[in-house]
Image (cartoon, rainbow, N blue to C red; front, top):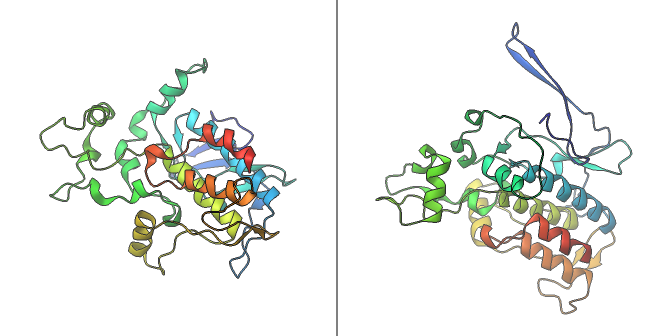
Length: 284
């Protein structure tokens, strides 16, 4: 975290180790603007489309930076997007379940990054942590909830494998006698894109896209199997969306539906990337 320097990422100012109390204190940047207020008690939107654009722009830029650094946030949601004091900038906060993925950092370095790498002990970020279902349930991507990872014996075989072994299985799904990896997509930065998509939906409509009647299993099933619905209106201005399949392809509603379909794509391999979102988002 101390390495991270970006306008849309909360800054870690200092780390204080107190051996006497057996505690470690993190001194974080204070974001006086507070969290985003995005819904009324009646689950209606309170943000204008202009405000939603600004929030999404800042969140996208922050996520792009994190992914470039090899960091998967894993808990993107409105509550983890805070305003600065002047409320002109939104920053991503709360890295409690974040994961450092060296393979993503390597890919970034292969592009245009010439900065020296910070030495990070990979033992602090074992792969089994990434495979655990962590984060806020309503914002979890389908691939995180997919229980088909489990083998016939019910054991989560993948958690005991190294990065190299997993890469080998993913590039050659028939490798190995038991082939435990072929049924579940790898967990990548795409899980953050999904969570950002759910956040986008919340900001636009004032409620979440998937529900489970306070039942975790019903919620998971809804996320895995059902499509999201589009309200007739969006934003504080109550702009007409045109529904799930708007007829006017040039309308704001059509653009929003297009973006939501791309970010809330259940197959991670077909989900839009942050880079592509930056190109398409000006259409909104």
